[in-house]
Amino acid sequence: MTARRDPTAHRDPTAPGRPLRRITARSAKRSAGRFTDRFALRTLRARLIAGLLALLLVTLAGVGVAVTTALQHYLVQQLDQRLTDAGGRYAASLEHGTASSAGARSDTRAQSPGTFGARLLHGTVTNAGVVDGDADDTDVANGTVPADTDDTVRLDPADQQRLASLAVGGPPVSVRLSALGPYRVRAVAGQDGDVLVTGLPLHQVGETEHQVLVLELAAFAIALATAGIAGALWVRIALRPLDLIADTAERVSALPLATGEVVLSERAPEADPRTETGRVGLSLNRMLGHVEQALAQRHASENRLRSFAADASHELRTPVATIRAHTELALRYPGEVPTEVRHSLERVEAETHRMGAIVADLLLLARLDAGRPLASDQVDLTRIALDRTQDARAAAPAHHWRLELPAEPVLVTGDEHRLHQVVSNLLTNAHRHTPDGTTVTLRIEGHRLTITDDGPGIPPEVAPHVFERFVRGDRSRTRAGGGTGLGLAIVHAVVAAHGGTVRLAPGPEGGTVATVELP
Image (cartoon, rainbow, N blue to C red; front, side):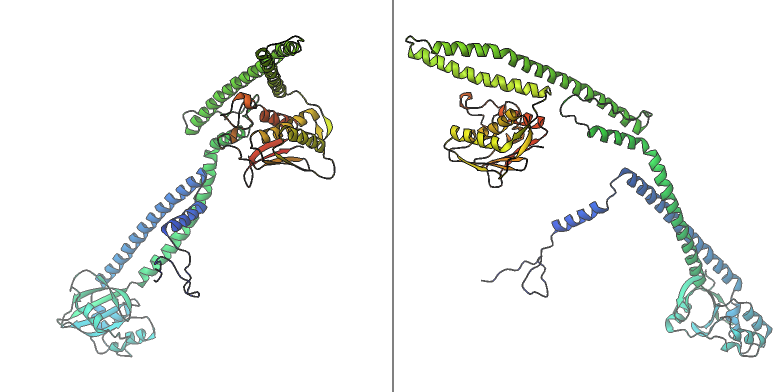
């Protein structure tokens, strides 16, 4: 069995049998996209200037083509007029044996250098010559040399055929002679039944066109550079109101709008509403006004909610404490109490303890929301880790608890009681949402405290909301089974009040990693 070779694979000639990477339409399109992104005009100002220069370039190119075409037509017309005026005199002078006649001398002297002449008889070229303006032209004019020796031109059969095909008495046409190059020629009838062909070179027309083209390119380059600089200045001035609107939007985007009281004093400068930038600025200001009103309403609603939570928590403390006191008193009754009644009283006592903890948590959150300062003492973070880990080991003995602490105490400034609560809540969260046998590791490095477990991890749908209030990781469990959804919210609020950060993320090998950074 032989392997089938991929025809689209390119092979390295220095390494037979080793295919190089396959070049596909998708990879080519990706490369082209990267090239386009690199050289794309991203700003509106750049696109406007580029469009202006492109339009100007097209206009100048059109003008250049029109001017060059008109100039070429004019120069060719001038050559045609000179050919018409010259007739066949120079070609007729070529048939004289010497230049002794005054007519031959005058015909030769009257022709400009480069003038071509040929005499055809019965379709065959008998004489052909050109005036090149050198010394022998003067000798011919003076009669000291024969006229037929003056710069005779040898024509190949193709040249002779082209000359023989000329229409006698017709308009001048352009031909290319092998020995001379491009010429404008015209054929007229001679007096002896022959055909006289006179031609003028076209190289002067080409040279003139080239000079004009160079001048045009230089002028167009100067015009493009001037237009580019002037256009950039003009576009900058024209887009100045739009830049001011963009600056306003950037300043607003940098404001902390998520929480707290927000004052949106930023506004775009007033502009003529009949213009596009004026309409954009007016719409932006109107939108900022709506956003400011909505944020004010949100802040007022949050304040009312905080006040309600604080007031309700404060008011609930007394009745909850009273219920718990009466329940404990009833359980101390020395007489016989029916089993069902004692069980009910014990459940009431347990729920009042739980309700008291909820009220205390709500009251703590309300105080933190109100910005009440915490205690600022020197706290040994390693001692807190030791104490809280021992409590967690007693509460969840089926888990494996590990401590990784530095040799020296780690001292931070803060509220010791609240920091105890932070570590306790994180450890409680670690063992409450993991099965028995899970390993929980508490590590302290500098002012960073990390709690890692190898449990099932955080559900993806819950992960973005773990620090929100009343969010529970396991929505299926009953309220009797555990927390209220306030533990991590308290952790976040206490750490933030200390000027630190806390985050909860999946571990590199599964599980969950909680990290607390304290200043």
